[in-house]
Image (cartoon, rainbow, N blue to C red):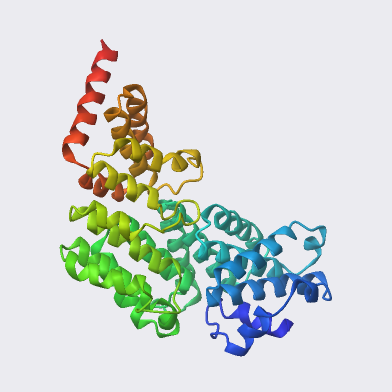
Length: 387
């Protein structure tokens, strides 16, 4: 069993071979009770292999259960006495599992701990893994400058080791693609779709991501009709039934935004009627519903829809938070709460940083008369306070 766990872990490192179906199944069937029969170092390896097996199969409910079980066993004084590779494997598996479920806060916590433990290892494969995990965790939280730092360190490591510069693992590819999605960068999205398709080792698990990149590039270049058709197929799982489960949800999210752009708020809200918040509002259906309600003039509902976003303000994914704030500012203004509207409008100056191309897109979807009313109100209020 320990051999299977190490094979599973090795498959995530640079140059590692994909796990066999037998390896995945053996680890998925491993129970917590069986783990207790092993020494502590072996338990850390087995926990990592077990979590990765569930993550690989995208069985999110079971994956989260075993991940939280493993997380509950940390910290442990015995961790100071075991091989650093066991801790790196443990950290990386927890980060990967939380990323798979969209739990960006926990993913970032474990990616940072992995970087701390990395100081005790001179294995370049673990360095590359750590940079990839960190890059994707930062992409999930919208910290795109940090993503670029992680990717630069990865490129430098590849050059230093003389590895194939065209190579990229799962984490790096998803981090680069998500960064391009968050920046609404059509050229990079188009390039990423081709790159993913040419990396045969990951193609079977990332076909849907390649399609998502291509669809969004088409949408940004004005071909919303073709993009919509592709989003529907991706959301249905047609493009890649075994791909990351966040990709179909992302496709549905982007499809809804396209419908809002086309002036169809009711169709957009119907599309996401059963959509739930993913992780720390990484994908936030409340924001889409609120924009649709602004388009229909239902300002009270727009406020009610985004109340949970405000309650989770400190952990809300930063790339969507400014869009939430601008919808609420308009809704407050239209419902006679000028003071609240003004405070939120000023807050946008703090939150609308370089990661938020989406804010520009969302403001284009909001009724422009409402947006101009907010701008006029804010400028008049500032002028009054100045004098």
